[in-house]
Length: 346
Ligand code: ADP
Ligand code: MN
Ligand code: MN
Ligand code: MN
Image 1: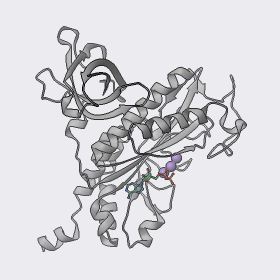
Image 2: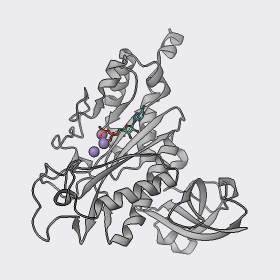
Image 3: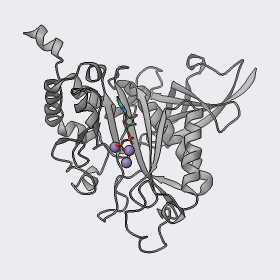
Image 4: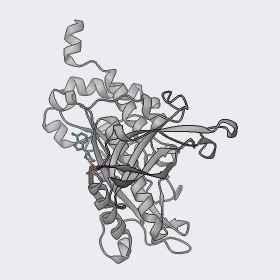
């Protein structure tokens, strides 16, 4: 038997943006455990905005498991929060009720700022560094500093060793701002991995005295970029059948459901989606080929392949919940009949 360190990780009840929480228990297993070998566990919900003090037990239900490369015999356990009855999802547990479809693929581009001493990493104590321009995909100490690259590389290796589909890194437009991309098939799989990648980044930067600032516009109404979490998506039908008529019907549905999308695309998005800094205004839907100022960017490859492939919704922000973002995208897609459904109805 080996003693495994199980880190149970969950989302707390803070609004509008939940925090990641985690605690460790040690259990004996003959080999690396499977999901169904992991027990339910409890925690004090009155300390996480998930219960009142007089009846404070909440239950953690393991739903996804990854090796924890930062610990010997470590296991990262993504959990849903459920009620003491052991079955009913807690009100804060959005994952339990989202739409899922293994044929739907999601690629999230997580942007964020490194923060140290209350300001973006590399910002002087007062005032601002040289304006935006050289930082995006930049190289060299004056552009990216001395520690950020070390962190993003370590984070990449942690994610890959955990089996998380980390797909890439780039320095972003503002100083101290970076991006990583996470891919997954199915909304739960993609979003679980994104939450776990966020967790690994926050845990990693503890030792550097650095925080991750996920707010979508941390520098306010200035000429400094905000942070998004572009959601690239494709269903099996979009990849394999597609077509111009279906695409136009899809865009009409996205236009119709504008406010349902904005409601789950992250708080304070009106401060980011102003129409400046490569964004579209939050209250008007638009799409365009290779257009980084549109709500949805249609890649050239999509048009060249006969309106088949993936689309990029550029509106979700860096604090958005990938569970709810993916689910809303699937909901809107599901409202559009495919050609088989159209001919069946005729
Ligand atoms: P950009 O910065 O140009 O907008 P990125 O390279 O940062 O693009 O991100 C593109 C994302 O699109 C990646 O996360 C990738 O996994 C995702 N992606 C690529 N193909 C598909 C697809 N068929 N379905 C869903 N997502 C996809
Ligand atoms: Mn990107
Ligand atoms: Mn980006
Ligand atoms: Mn993008």
